[in-house]
Image (cartoon, rainbow, N blue to C red):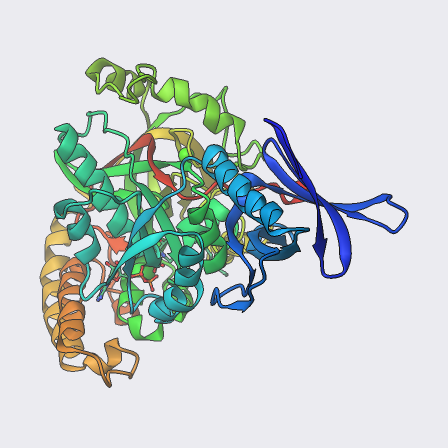
Length: 573
Ligand SMILES: CCCCCCCCCCCCC/C=C/[C@@H](O)[C@H](COP(=O)(O)O)NC(=O)CCCCC
Ligand SMILES: Nc1ncnc2c1ncn2[C@@H]1O[C@H](COP(=O)(O)OP(=O)(O)O)[C@@H](O)[C@H]1O
Ligand SMILES: [Ca+2]
């Protein structure tokens, strides 16, 4: 074996073929050597994508040793499948000429791993929502995720949630010393809990008031990982290009880091929620409100509710004001894609954090800096809308592979505001249908889209206040009875499978049931609602109904970090 400061090289065998193994710089490679000593095919793996190195011949999942000889070691690494966005665990067993060479290889590879991959997590806090999506969260974690964490030497503390907001409260209140990241196994709602926990905790520790709509929030260090097991899985899909638990796990293990813009939603001087994917009024709000009544259908509830709400053919009056982003940098119709290593996003960092001190990794919460992000001419648009949506990223998901705004950026400090004016049912269907194809959904006369830094929404003067009050009284009566129905009929909530569920689980759903019912006060009214015209919709904020109509939204560039790397350009694979 030859070792110098930059290269390690030796002969090895894979099966009965001889190879030259080489560790050089950032790569480990092995090249087949034929009987005439000529070099053949080379396989090369970046050290940063090595998952683990084990002595002996080792199985992939169980780590059970098949045959433990002194000469063998097994390398586990990221393997790209098909178009390259789906990752699986690659495994190759190497046989060395002597035990000494084998030990040298395992030592050298482990050292290289530490040097070239310093930001890998060692300890993770994992929250599993056992009821998200198709209710496979626990199974997904234990069968697909945990064995990979174990292989990579990552220890995890697992909390199976028993109620809504448990994960958020845990992150806000408990001691998180030693954890390098928080992971959710669930959908966008579960991700949102972690998002609120991580942002809230970071602001508490930095002494920043989240309620002040003009404040510059402190960016969060604790990374968030998403193992998709939900209904929409938009956050996962839009940051990885796929919703696959194994791919997500491998991104977490290798410590990938993707900054993400976050939109804060305020009502007057109170923080209502944060959003990363969609803050949507009109159609998307109505779909969510309707879908909450059919949660027992699982992910299909959105398709069913989408159809029902479409038939209602509603539109709503509104006054939209927005602060445009710099159109010289990018635009929602420039036909570009935010891909891994995106130039627009990386160049945004300096603009977003002009006072970043790289020596201390501290961000200044300088007020004038924050105000400069809010400077500019506000634009006002009044009208009747089928929907008004704001999205910080493309919001692509399996239902809409290109997303709500295909050219939006994950981390440029802007969001795209999409306004769909009142139109005929066929026109709106065309708009919706284009979300499922590659056709441009903005190329329609009743649709406008703007890249923005902030948005305010209000009801036109005199339009709705009275009706809203009347409507709320009606809503209260409906909610009271529907909440009672739900709680009396928990079987419906559990999709007809309550056998073996603990009282605690039931209590968890009761809390969610009542919370949802409370929030449904403005939004319950689809389905039977169609008999009553109404002029106010609800806001869907990453799958939660907001309790206010008149809101203001502001984008906080690169506020959180995910264990992801953005969507890799599949043509380059
Ligand atoms: C004729 C075909 C119509 C298809 C329309 C497709 C449009 C899809 C746009 C999807 C945007 C998704 C934005 C993300 C929203 C999620 O945060 C939210 C909660 O997800 P989860 O916690 O996993 O339940 N999901 C939704 O609000 C569902 C919207 C579905 C609208 C049809
Ligand atoms: N044990 C639990 N019981 C009830 N609700 C829960 C529980 N754990 C999490 N939740 C809530 O369930 C909501 C939906 O979860 P999510 O994982 O996003 O699934 P889905 O994608 O199917 O909506 C989240 O908003 C979360 O707050
Ligand atoms: Ca953005």
